[in-house]
Length: 210
Image (cartoon, rainbow, N blue to C red; front, side, top):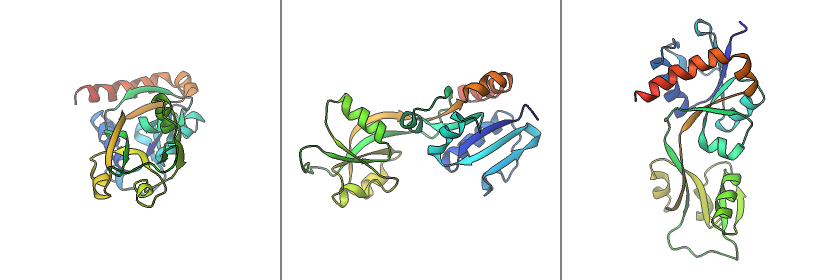
C-alpha cells in the first residue's frame, strides 16, 4: 500500500464537518467513523489512514511527514507557521480571532496584558497596530483571565460570541476570519501527487457546490 494516504484531523466540530465533505466527495467512510474513540482509523477500501490529533498538533504531524495531509484551522496555521503547503480552503468551521475584554475596564500598568493561546498571532497583531503589550500564554479558559485580574484583554477564537457574553466580556477588535484548510507535506506532494491532487479536486468540487 505504497499509495496509502495518511490524513491528520482534529477531533470535534472540524472532524465531523470534514467527514461530511469527504462523504459528499464520494469517499466511503464507515458509519461509526465519527463515533470511534481510536486515535488511528484505517479505511482500507479507500487506502486512507486517519490520525486524530489535537488541533495544534495537526500541522506538526504534516510538517514532519507522519501525515501526508492534514485539516487545520487557519488560526493554527497562523500561530504555528509550519513548513507545509496550504492547498484548499474547505470553508468549514467558520469563526474568527478577536480581541475582547471587560467593557470600560482601565488598563493596569503601562502595557496592557493580553492573555491568549495564540501568542505569535497576538504579538504580530499588536505590533502592526503600534501598540506595546505583554503577552500571557494560556492553554484554555481564556475568558477567565480578565475576570481574575490576570490580563486586561484576551485574544481568542469567537464563533457565536455567546461565551464572551456569558462571562461579561465584549469584542473590542476583530483580527481575522478563520476557516479550516487542507495542508500537505511538501515531500508527500512530490511522491503522491496524483492521489493528493485527486482528493483535493474531489473536495474542491464539493466546496464549490456549497
